[in-house]
Image 1 (cartoon, rainbow, N blue to C red):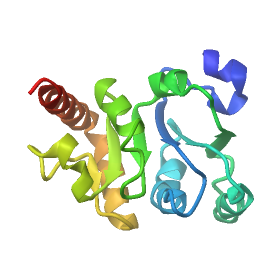
Image 2: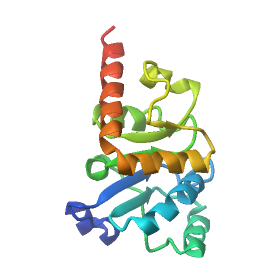
Image 3: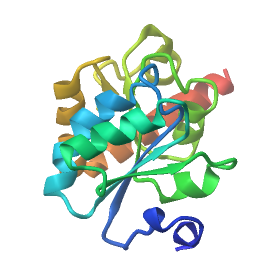
Length: 178
């Protein structure tokens, strides 16, 4: 595993499922929302890997939240990466927890790479998901329980998320050529 050579926290087995959250480690990015939603799931699913990517002055506060809940050994914070391509190739799911974030590069990259994602709802998503208003890929902004429900559904029905990602790609490519 090439990523494990970069950072031991990024070691994965073939049976592991990897959730990545690339962006800013800030409240604005919604990392704390993701932590509250996924923390209990990581405790129950030992083959679930969560990577919070990025950096900020809030990093130590976020780590303290993980430590307080006992999740600091279960959720990795490997730092910022100049090139996310290798990390995204390892991802089974990408989470973008704050409305309106990631739309310039991350969402299109996930869509074109067939990477399922969970992204906070918002009108700006219509260019990616207009034909699927109830997409499994979208959760209610700021709602920990709804995000957790979507994560559980992804754990239980990964094919539905892969299909939704393929549908989003097809829609995006169709718009590019119209």
